[in-house]
Image 1 (spheres, one colour):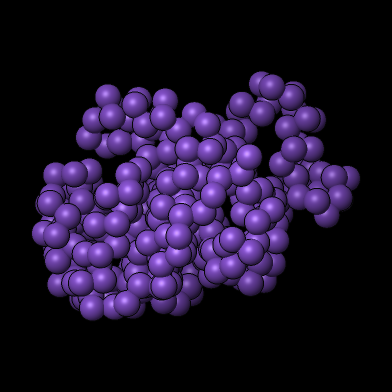
Image 2: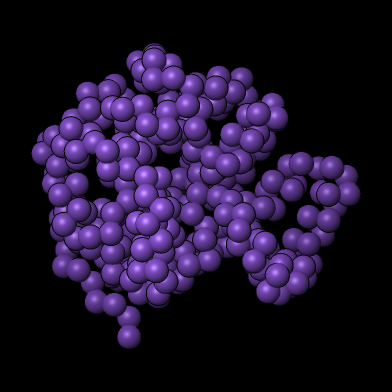
Length: 300
């Protein structure tokens, strides 16, 4: 994985410290062209991986990249699923059957619907899980998706329910059908690692809050430090800046000091913040970024 991954919270009005900033960002990014402009700024700074939800607007971003392969020859998406609100909205807008047709995979509506119906009728959890994954992945057809993440809302719910096998089902399906590595986002890193060990998922990719202040670190900072020091997994750190509470250099130097953190996911909406983060990472880790390219023109 790349050292820096670009996230999408800022595009959909998510800010853990300020509701006012969240509202302003939601207004700014109502048009997909504004999202594409920021992604192109990140691309120009050598950031080639977009770790994103499966929001309907991301489907428009995926369409743009698919239409312009020469402009994004090495671009990667890390889908994070599911995005529950879009299902509720689709049922409201299109009705139940219309929503099914919109989201079911292109292998054939009848085949997919039968797979889902049979799964519900027989309580075949594997069939249900794989159908939902395929529905979420439909928007990324033909694009590079080397890692597919299960969102923390579902991960932590499954942990609470003790439904360990669901993690193995998800991991197996994304490997077999998409040739991708499974990733897991969580708000309780120690508990998730124990569960993934039990179901035999070796050296998993796990994204969790990791920062100097312990901001939104559930399970205790000492348990996270212990995991980073002694557990076998591939950590992706999020919330490293604690929503702006930690100065960027201080935050990134702290991450650099931690053992084994493989990647950092961050969100930004200005050229200055994107550029300064990319340059700080290059300086602190002393790793060259991909050759920068000029910002790409937006579609007409």
